[in-house]
Length: 252
Image (cartoon, rainbow, N blue to C red; front, side, top):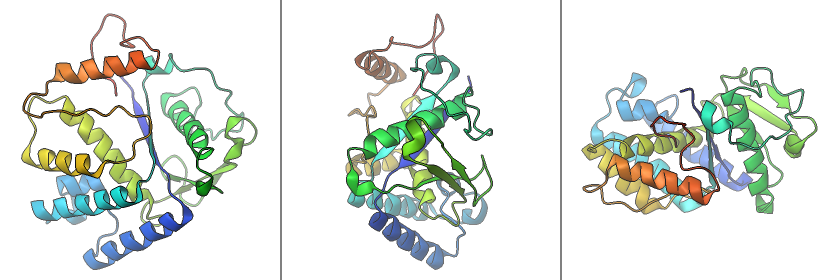
């Protein structure tokens, strides 16, 4: 079914500047336009000539940055089934029309922004806040005023390309790791590179906020274990074990 995952990486102004400078140095040394981690992993496009060790080095660079800075990472995934389980939150009338609040992508982004607000209230060092979203929904350089309602705390969200707002490349990294680890968890065997990435990410202890994390033995891990952990996590959060009626499937 249609699913959408949005990921937010929160950082202070000082951390944002440091991340910008460090990524800029890497891009200058390599001559690459940006660090797009799906392409790096698959060695597509401008990074097609990377060796396996080069690929690992890029992931190690980003992982070490997340480890040292402990950026809070918030994840919101919705599907048509899980959308029905969410509480009703008033959506401002002037919400960007490209983000239909009745659609899965639009509501998923709205919920993520709401959770960002709740987290920031606990972190005054992150204020004042600016929200940057990877362009695609709207042209780079444009903004959307959020008006009244729960999101008015943010005032605006800004849209930009990751080759100009370099910190968005860290959100791209977090999204890749999140999706890759979920994909690996549903496969009977892991590749050598997946094992190395799993070891790297596990040792870094990334700061996932309110996300299910488990300790596993890759040689004994099964898809049934993955489903069991998801169901337990849903029950702990006050939901039914599965959002599906009489059909199986995986939802993260």
